[in-house]
Length: 239
Image (cartoon, rainbow, N blue to C red; front, side, top):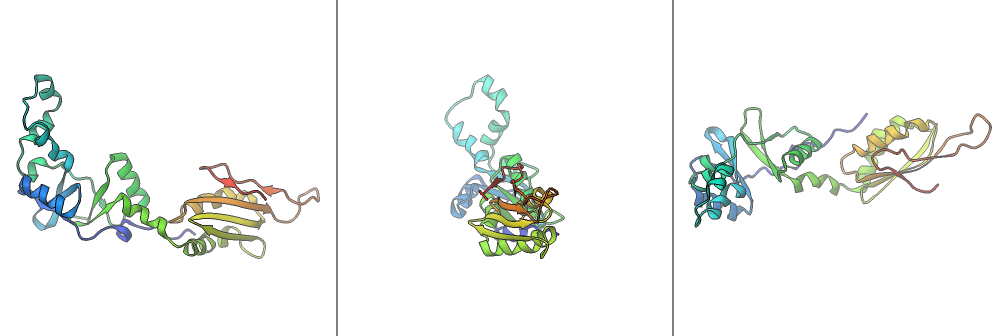
């Protein structure tokens, strides 16, 4: 029923700056400066990624450059002190590298970034060869989808299946990524399902409802307006 989710391959940057294990401290800093990045994949033979060197891994050299740390600091920050004395990428990198595959969904990539508290992830193939890089900014590109494109997908992939015409007269409007499902529907119990499926459409910022039940109730009275489902912050527009 639901449309194909966007993948990392849809938004990743394919031209990536990288260094080898033997790259010097100065070479790493210069590459970061020239490419305006804060981290670099470290590669070995065949382009296979073996680690990532970041600004955080370089800073200890400056931090401890002109001071002799006390015993407590030496015990507490042994890894940083080791990096302060390092001169090559193989010693400065974090290994193994946290990576994603090109066929990973954007939602999963976003969760990986959030849990690891990183700003970008190298993208690799099945044997670990670097294919590109995906950043937080790349993951947000789906929210640049055209409102008309989003509306068409919601109609085709959600409304047409849950509320088929002519039994229902549901209508879809989208403004700035916010989807409003309005009109009349026959089976109001499907509204929470619709909310979940619409939110899963790439580019949807939020979902609002302005729905009423179709036909009459068992007592012969007109059906009441349908309240928006109280899941994930749904809100309803006044009927």
